[in-house]
Image 1 (cartoon, rainbow, N blue to C red):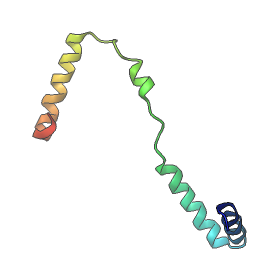
Image 2 (cartoon, rainbow, N blue to C red; image 1 turned 90 degrees about the vertical axis):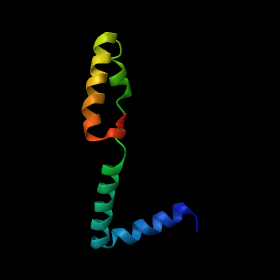
Image 3 (cartoon, one colour; image 1 turned 180 degrees about the horizontal axis):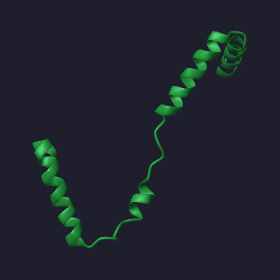
Image 4 (cartoon, helix red, strand yellow; image 1 turned 120 degrees about the vertical axis):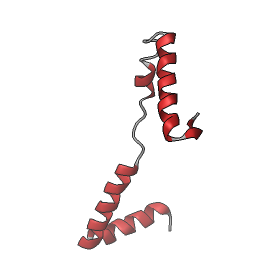
Length: 75
């Protein structure tokens, strides 16, 4: 039996069983939630070059200083 036949057999079985339908629905909902969210790389990169180097360095120093207080291995 190939995969398509197995799926067809399972669908027939599920269509006849309300409990299995509910369980499959819950599983599919969890599966959709666990799918990785689409990336936002393009949105982030659209901001490239919008602040000058001095400001970027200042932001970097602040982030390093603040996160360094939480976890000294951050650097």
